[in-house]
Image: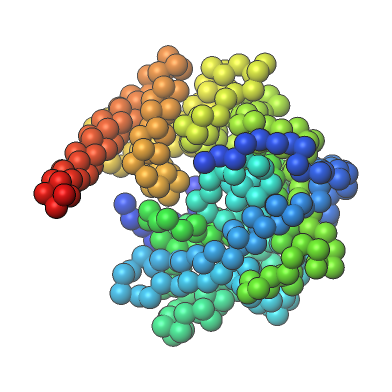
Length: 402
């Protein structure tokens, strides 16, 4: 997707500023490759495995953890819901509106967290609704259904018009243009603010050519339509098995990469086709200690990502840093994907090192990463000093009592 196409993103409201040991044998995979469904992507095959008991337990835990959608205006009550209940209710609303859904899936880091034994961190739940329709009008009609469904979850906004609800609870929305090869829509729900709980990204897909960036991002979990959020059954009590998918050509290979913390792409140049180049996600993975797969030129991969990132988010001349699209994108990303000061520090450390290795100018990106490194280093030092000051009087009090 080109930068010009992504300019059609509608920013409805301004955005406020323990790994488990790897054990690939425990997955007990029953693999098969099935033809892609009519509503899925244009790839020829989708690799599949049946969900294990440990994966099912993680899925239930992830999808039963309450999510809170914070409004952009603080006087409006937030919306809290269980993901399973939210997905089930929205699916019913879509069906009532005449929009038929083939299936609903969880993808992204939430799916990788469920499928891999490495227990990846996740900050949002990426829910994918596969539409059984090729009509562009159905893709456009989804927006009204999402807005009406939000009204049912929050009586306080029942009388609000559509633009008001969008500005309050849908900070980011994108719909592919009519004549584009892909056909999908994305809605980010809840204000983009730091939070310890995951947020919701809803994607409605008719067809999509590039469904993942790296192999560890290629996983999807099929969400059963009738799975209750309250007291869900055990895996043995389900009437049929749950499928785990990989959009990569080999489920076993993608799973191996995830379990071993390997960053892999078939060709380093393929990231140039991805919006943003996957740069910020790559920096996050590197900050987690993940390594680039052997045989892939790391510098070539990083240069390809930087090239695409600078095309989609232009660099300013340095005199108006706050208005730079590049700076705004980086700040928005780290705010929502890095929850603690150490995580933020290591993210910017990796970003700085990537730019440094590229031998390219990129003054805005390099200066921003360096500035944030100093900021978070000072913040963590001050925070540790405050903790030490609080601890010393307590220790003195304990000694006096003894």
